[in-house]
Length: 281
Image 1 (tube, rainbow, N blue to C red):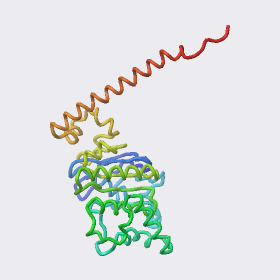
Image 2: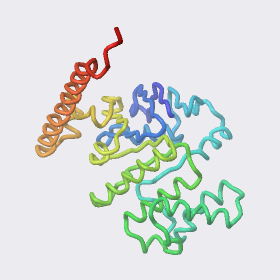
Image 3: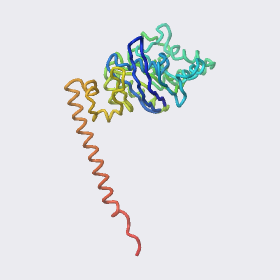
């Protein structure tokens, strides 16, 4: 779990993050969304330690990351995986060498043990047998999956994804979203995703933090976002008439489900006594 408490960040006279707090739980996808200039990227960089907040705290499972010295922060960073926006693969290295890079930096494993781990994570992202290929030989979706494999090769407790669907077609984006979600649940990772992709918001947004001009404007789940009355959020998420109509339809569907659930509960409560035999007299 990651807790963000009253984070503030300024650059010169410009305040970019203003008193933002959030709780990002393990085993779920935590999304930071907002328009360009809203402060979401700066917030993520403050959380991961690339920027030093002017005020506030970032706690990793209760440990104050902002108060740690350099050596202590290095230990926490060993538990962090990062999926970069452009995948950030080394063009001159093979897939196998790219994924092995963090293992060579942070472990003293034998070559065989490192290769076994590389093959394990490649299998997990459905890329068995591409070890000797170079990034130039891969499609955009395959590059993202290689980058994801590299991000999880050290078994991180925390996974940060910066625009993981950038440059991908809608179908491939859904595949990447599903994969990130599965890995998050399977390994109980605290996953933090910075995204503009509204499909990601609706499909995997267990927790959503909406930023507006450096402030936390709204927070909730992908189901709650359907019923939100926050005008700025609705204008951002459901910008087109088509999406607004889709929101209205989903609201009707969700309302029907809630109503049906309540009716079923009432029916069960009503019928329950008849299912219990009367006591012997």
